[in-house]
Length: 309
Image (cartoon, rainbow, N blue to C red; front, side, top):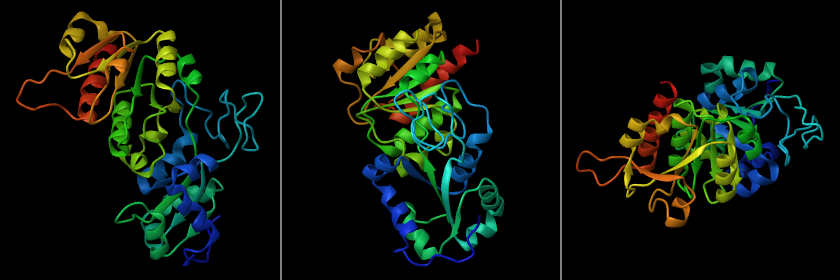
């Protein structure tokens, strides 16, 4: 349903509730987050319409995952693991200009039963987390999955983020993992919130494409992935072995979880110890190092090539 009256006040209860989702505490309490721009809205609308990858939560689920990943039709964890019904987007805010440019998205949202609220440019500016809003902003349900659901799906390529604090970097790694065909991304409890608006934007829609585990203790995640048959490779610039060696000896063809550390200080020794081996991306020129997103891209595509023979 598309509301005919334009909301012009930032004091509107629905606008105020959406604005609060800029805070992590509000997102965690409500299990809702903001997805801004036509690309994110398009992918959120399509989330329930595409085949899931291994480990994905139920498509079209109406509520948060419980401890066992079950969702009930009421929006609360279900006892039998059955998926509830309903769209991923709970509300869509749109300006008149954006509606004229993206009428197919607002029509698709309305067809899914999503309330579509027309808002003024001033209201959108208050809601949006960007300097130049694109006029479309969706309130979405959380879509992360339990760690055990990911490991039970026999993944072959997984990303494990340890102490990654920059949301732009985290979102870019998520996008890269999606492009490389990874089966999931695990955000450790010391890493940024995957629902941070900057992380959502940097993922360019990839948040909606592959299973994401949020807030898992790092050691627990590493143990679970190893138990599922994955080797754990730590990307570490000072490691004795280089990526080229693993490509040559065929080690990258095995199911692998890549462990990536903090942007500034990398992986401390105690976290490197969680891996089966540490691996350095070779630097052939004079650059001091690669940034997190670039190093992740090199490692993940090396594994992707090995998987494809």
